Image 1 (cartoon, rainbow, N blue to C red):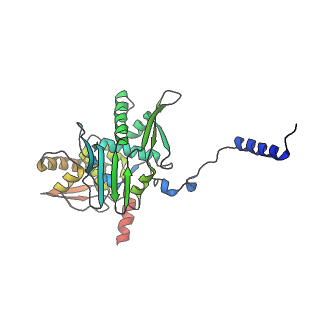
Image 2 (image 1 turned 60 degrees about the vertical axis):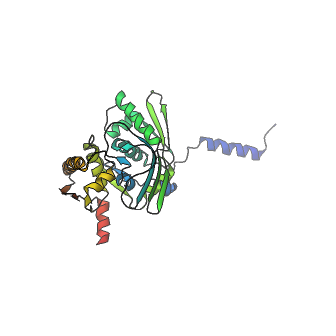
Amino acid sequence: MSLPSRMLSLLEENRKRSLAKPKEVKVDDVDAANLLPNWSESVRRVPNAALRSALFGAIGKGHRPYVEQMEINALGGISIFYTGALLDQGDLNVWETVLHLARMQELGSECRVTAYRLLKVLGKTDTGKNRKILDKYISRLKATALQVKVGKHSYEGSLIHEVYRAQDERSERIYVIRLNPKLHVLFKGDQYTDVNWSIRQALNGKPLAQWVHGFYSTHARPFDYKVETLHQLCGSRASSLSDFKKDLRRSLEAVAYASTAEGQPFSYLLEGNLVQVKTTPSASQQRHLAKKR
């Protein structure tokens, strides 16, 4: 018994659809609100809220207190309440790298990356020890809860929305990471900074120097700050201001050396209780300064 011609036609259409290649989604077809602004390989684009506060503190190795709804010291115009284990500059390295690898796809979609590649981009060797440390960083970033407000924009959620581990056909460890689509509000307007990755890597192992570099990178023309203000903003555990001041001087010197080596002169003057810094503005910061003239 033959099938009606209309049914034959429908079957043929379904067959053609099944053989057709899936439609490639172009960036232009995706809602721009769900995409991070793109940036080059040489930098890491970071929300200013993360660089102008003690969210990722200038702290060394050791015990990490767990806090609930703790108000984080931050520069004026930024409000942060945080729940989780206190974060350091190593956590920021990993979060910057996750943002960097996920920047070419829609926020909220799965970012699949091998442990080997994550470590390579971080500038680390692929060893069992480094994989365990990376695991801890990823888990700690997942177990965070933030309430961030910058101007009229706000975000509530974790730094990493979801993560699970898998293995490919070669038994290679894979991280499947998902970021909260709402993270894009922290990149609104000019509320982010392109941090030179080479300079930051040159400062590995020097948490205060990394914090100082990130903090002053957010300034097109740095203000003068009191030592006490920087002590509060960076989350230092130094027991006295005099101890912190010594560490701060060493850190400023380290940033000046690493920056100059990369062709981005950085100079400072630390007299009494005041810190004066001169930096090399980025291209976007130079445009920002030009508009103000």
